[in-house]
Amino acid sequence: AQSVSQHNHHVILSEAASLELGCNYSYGGTVNLFWYVQYPGQHLQLLLKYFSGDPLVKGIKGFEAEFIKSKFSFNLRKPSVQWSDTAEYFCAVIKTAGNKLTFGGGTRVLVKP
Amino acid sequence: DTEVTQTPKHLVMGMTNKKSLKCEQHMGHRAMYWYKQKAKKPPELMFVYSYEKLSINESVPSRFSPECPNSSLLNLHLHALQPEDSALYLCASSQDRGQGGAFFGQGTRLTVV
Image (tube, rainbow over all chains, first blue to last red):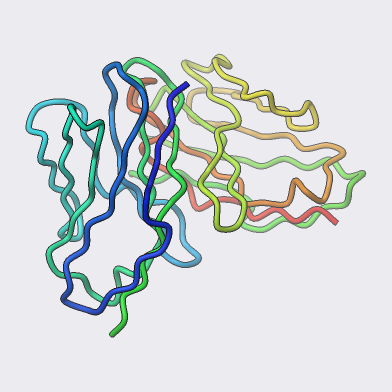
């Protein structure tokens, strides 16, 4: 069965610091990859997704992620965070042509002003 | 229109009640999903409908009964729930199965008393 691991459960950083959140998955076949964000009290929003092509994917709000197939990783990055980036971030994976989206455990990010 | 609309936003029900959660999307997506999210946890998949047919049931208890009346609507019928079923119930939709639940609704916060 596929699984998704997010190694950092909590991250605390100051505004303007750089952010990198790790995501690893266990499935060996072809997958589609996603990062979602959930702001306090709000619903899940899609930040970015990778299906194929350029492994460096740019999303909304200045986020990007890099797919490294050999490492089964899809890490999320933002060069300079803002207080408004305080949220929970979820990595998710689905097998290509499958229909079960599996989420990682989430990373709570707190950006101090 | 890139929204998934869920009603009601909040629901309190007794253990002997029967209620329904509703989800609607007008993006032409042919896959729709129900997820359950407990506090500080990632969403857990419950059901997947693909082209209005149930394709995945993640061993969900029969007190939860999904229904897909047409390609735009998804219902979750609730009966004889337990207090531990209290959670945020999320609906999602995507263009086809391989893309997973790309768009999520705001959820229905359910409390069982």
